Length: 415
Image (tube, rainbow, N blue to C red):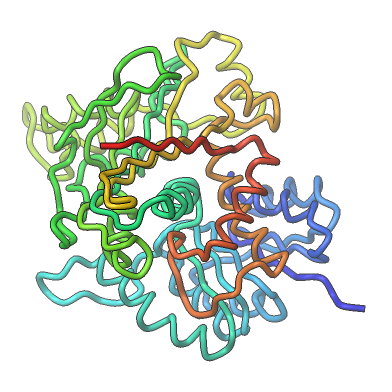
């Protein structure tokens, strides 16, 4: 009798916990090891699972991570970015597949004048790719909602074109509550991304663009009014630029555009210099503006009770949009393809799973990549980003997503 999979989930926050819970339901998974430095969080998660056991681990200790990875078919990295190198190396040493929600930092040292993050992504693909291929295993990074789910939607969008010129990933966050809660995920991550230049792929080159710059305006039929979307530091344009010819039919321009409550809160702070990381003197006292702003922001709610309390206080709006726009040619004519991703909002996510909409789409989006591993759907080996799925892998992904209430609406227009 064939043995089921053993999965190591490192990190028991919202993302790792969702993966573990979804894999607990998979018939092809026999064992889940949930590990984190926070033993209390591990115990709380393992208590509600049937196939799981827990472990405390210091992810800065490579030996400890490698010992946990031995015997695992898949290592899921839901830890902070700085632990990425240890976890990737441990997966390789253990002969396991690897999944990462992000693009880990500190993988390789960049030369002077080089972009460390971009160098790191290329290194993962070019250097770790052959290493994983040599042992017949696969590494996948960028496997949340964005990057992740939206990248798979982009794969599907370009199918409807013979050639592609422009690709937009547009995300609008319209959840607003009566309680002051501008961010439903890490405020330091949100403001850090917003306070740096973005990435775009323009005229065939990966470039940096001004934070909050290059605005576009869109009117979607399920939103109350036209929305403004701006440049935002994200992985997707880099992925599409690196794979423009191999996966995106020659795309020349690719952007990640973001709008909504969090942007509207952060943009005036940025323009006033209040997201600066540089120390300055104010009335005889030295302060770092970014740190002052961050100290005044509420933490994102984590528990069902916290989220329920915020909802009970009242909502201003519970909307959002995730849309891929692909422009190009089809049958010799100009064509625009829109892929609208529909997913549960705040109230529905809470009613379904006791979590926020942000937690739901990111965690479930990540768990769908894990499901591909659990059911042997991947046919690739090496190291890939989440925009590099095959047609069969992408179709399975969204067939499974539909079971979770995450669906696609594909619209085509002549231009």
